[in-house]
Length: 185
Length: 423
Image (cartoon, rainbow over all chains, first blue to last red; front, side, top):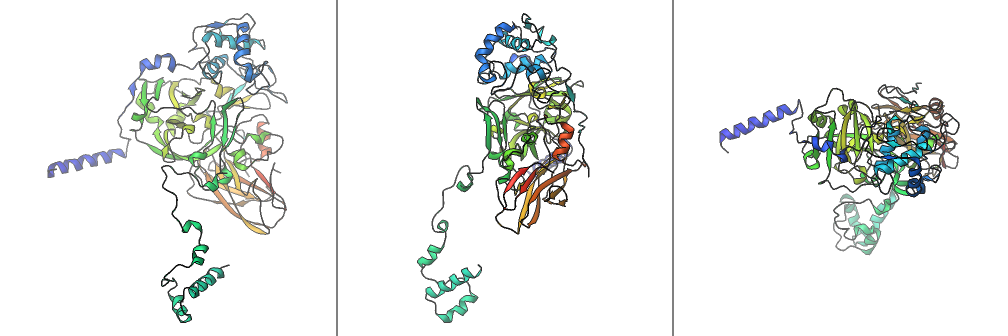
């Protein structure tokens, strides 16, 4: 290395060091992914107004058959009282001495039910159910407590219109982060 | 006791054939450097480990075989073994850093096997340019380290039960662990994608068998959140999110999404299962607290604690434990031996870090009388850890999550230790 290039090297090195104190100095390496972002495998979440719901439909009687095969083993034939979370019944119990948080008594949005069943159930084979099967299961669960009628067809249009019994049962703590509880000596 | 080695040495010197005249010199040069042969008595008196070669090197070290009882305690669904928790044995550990093999686990459908060469992170939604990142690229970003606790929102939930659970400290309160996480400030990658002004929330999704999805305020990700690749200096353990996880210092464990595959910026929360059906706290009036992200100040005496016993009395015992707060630094931990009547400040072991475990210590002169040991933490915001009574008065008894009340250990006159509810 010549004297001049050594000197140049030193100057460049120093300029790198001096800039690194102010802002992190790095090379952006993200790849443009607009197309990826549109593809189904990156759009699994369903919003409360139904964005992301796939085309399909189902009614409670169809769901009952699927439930018996796919769900009852863990959730129990009545959707409550087995090894998995309770799904049905107990609507109106939340303020009682023995509240039970089922899908129908507690969950504020029907969109959540579709979102969750599709991504996580059955637990040993997520994403194995068709869209029609998931709509049918949702219909079966919701109908069991009369949230929708037996012949109500759940589809990508009607599901977000379902009003859950506990729709207004939640109080957002964030962003205030107010603890109800402040104790001082 | 101290005289025994001296006697042994005197015996040794005599047996080594050194005359009585030399013992005077030997006491000046205390090492028996003139011994020509090693007598069998010496060899026999030494531990076996000093008389043979030890084990070979190991590529990855393991704890001593004598510490095999120091384990995470697993509590999983019998019908779905990947759905459950494992608890950090806080009662067996010291210091503040949780060893990687003992960091608590909460999985919603098991530990996924992810090939880092195949894994992608997508940042999309309300951004100027959706971007994808592979792990190789992420490893080239500037990294920061942050020591902090991660605590499951459901930690200590047995405290809501009517009767105090008789379980060791870590196995009732050990859904919390403390590690040094190293990774990329999430802010850097969000800025690279370009945040649109209407973005308020970020939907994070994991690549596990539950495709766990949950909404996080953008504000937190722009503050101190890390996209962690390393845990206590080594790459993340599979059960802690390998190859990539979120770390949100001080916030509920569920938000620290493991096996992270996507961050989607949105204008409102999704209302996913884990932000509605779970991790919300039902109150007495039937309403539920939602988006209770902060983990409030808490402390726990890890020793003496249930499962141990005090072998003699009167005697001095070292009370030690852990305190932490999602709001910042722990400023004070007080100890009571009389069920909360009187309190004494414990020593806080430094450095005290914000949103991290703080070890506290206090020697205790036990007189052999019935006692109730408690610890009470205060953080830098002035928040004081509540009694169980205060917590239940405020939150009812069906909240399930965010139980942070004072823990009481009853010491009987025999030195046995039980879990009791406070007085």
